[in-house]
Image (cartoon, rainbow, N blue to C red):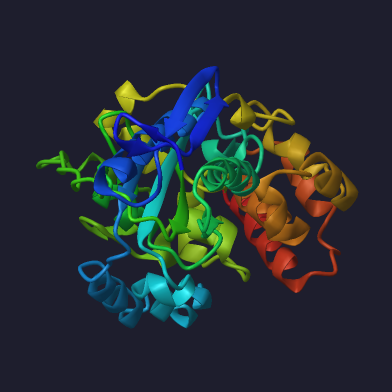
Length: 373
């Protein structure tokens, strides 16, 4: 093998308009060089930041176990079913030595804060207004991993983006990408409007130092939560959370929470909108620009969509996975909270003979609200 400056010369790689020189595989200096190159490759792929951590969650695992024991995960049975894999990353991917954690920004040009006050407008969480982040993140992580593999024979890996039992926020804060905010999301000096993804791999890359927390005494996120779902700093009761109720929860939405949902039909961003650090957030990747008018559309317009409209217009969107019935359920609740009008009452009444008992229950509730005003 050729020598260059006393080191084993493996080869060169042109990526993102830059030339990278790789020297062997395994010494601390070589791994430090590889880590630096990975950051550059990730930046060229559009990632906002990348960090490296050991697959060690010993501090976080007891907190997860306690959260599950309290039943705060609601109907998300998969959280408990796969808890052992979250607590033991090497059981999920054997021979994992390093977790490469990456962030990808998604903030749209116009967050929905102003539209929340207009009860006729449909509010979709910012993260779901564009393309499905699962696919975008995994595709880019795979390209990053393939670039690494081209330089390191024997490199093995798996990529994840909210697609497996991975403690994403825990690894991200270990890699100095941010800290866990009191709303439990990853927070940094550039805010919290970002997706997380990971590469579990067998490379022995130098780990980063954990990030320091900078929430201080601020409780803006707790105060802003419409349903008081952030029951304590760093602890969310999913059963009260609007994101859980409109996305994860498959059954009827508890009556006590329906008025508090307002016009939010998919997810909720109130805790992020209230966070002071999000004043410094950058605009997101173009892949996540709003599609199908999801940042400007009225509740009534979306309520007229047929099931075929739902399937076709939301192809490639994370919203599609909740299915048409839940989509209609969420819209009915929001229409029940909307200012009363004959048009809304007629639209709700027209679906009272719907075959879904769950949907009929919500329709009756919404019509009674308008009748009692």
